[in-house]
Image 1: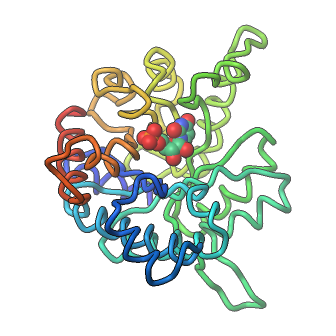
Image 2: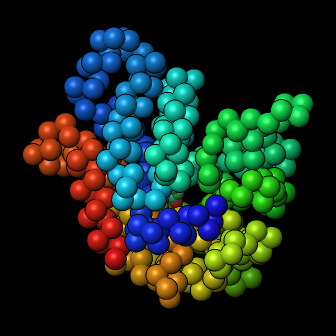
Image 3: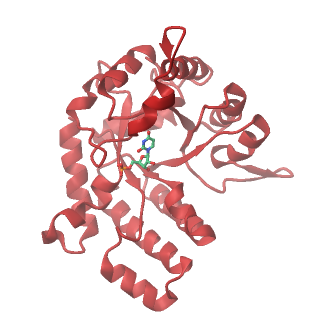
Amino acid sequence: MIDSLLKKIDELNNPTVVGLDPTLEMMPGSLKANLFEQYGKTPEAVGRIFTAFNKEIIDSVADIVPAVKPQIAMYEKYGLEGLKAYADTIRYAAEKGLIVIGDIKRGDISSTAAAYAAHIGGTDIEGEEFDLWQEDWITVNPYLGVDGIQPFIDACNKKDRGIFVLVKTSNPSSSQLQDIVVDGHTIYERVAELVEEWGRQSMGTLGYSRIGAVVGATHKEQGEKLRKLMPQTFFLVPGYGAQGGTGADLRGFFDKEGRGCIVNSSRGITAAYKKDSRYGDKVGEAARDAALAMKNDLR
Ligand SMILES: O=c1ccn([C@@H]2O[C@H](COP(=O)(O)O)[C@@H](O)[C@H]2O)c(=O)[nH]1
């Protein structure tokens, strides 16, 4: 999967992932009115609204970006109907040829992590295998150490999928824990060393491993340092756009060939139609323009 991701980014000359983080406030009035009329103000209506919205975004960007990243929290908020929208979105994106990064940020003791790893490793029911979620990549939390991560690494290796481990997150208070210095090194540097080491069990053929790292676009210097510390680790870079990260900030996150990262923008692309009244409710058109502008900026 790491090789497919690298190839797809090269093919489209675009290291952008479109984040699918729907909220009711983000939805166009006409779409909401229509589905609330049919299904009432219910979780089922919201699930249908999110699915329809995501399909429009996917249709408008599938030929220009390699991947989408649905954020599971936005769907879980609406219970089973929300999760159905999450799963339907993933299936639709895959049908359109997009790589899917499920932003689920899981992590626990090994027995529980093994259950979470079903997101990428599949579910076995007495010898019958089910790929119920179908994400190609997921995000994971390394706070519990290697026994909480190994089940995900095993699933990656078995199914040729990938994980992005939280290393240096984009949020303002990430420094509270991640920048604590122990024995002369920050916690995030120590996590980076571990991720690079874990990745040696999971190398693709193009110089990067299936064990990637989340590195926030909002931390320019730290990103540059991490690229040097983690030469074989592919980065998922959130924090572009709505959180303030720009293309210029990210130069040092990429390797010498201009590879090594995929940069996420969620609200900056999916809510672009709200920023310019000329788009009206043309969600897809605005998303495509925003994704093309981001591609140019990253170049
Ligand atoms: O460090 C992190 C890790 C994950 N995220 C997630 O990325 C998107 C960002 O959304 P924007 O609208 O582009 O700000 C969201 O799903 C976060 O949960 C992150 O921002 N930072």
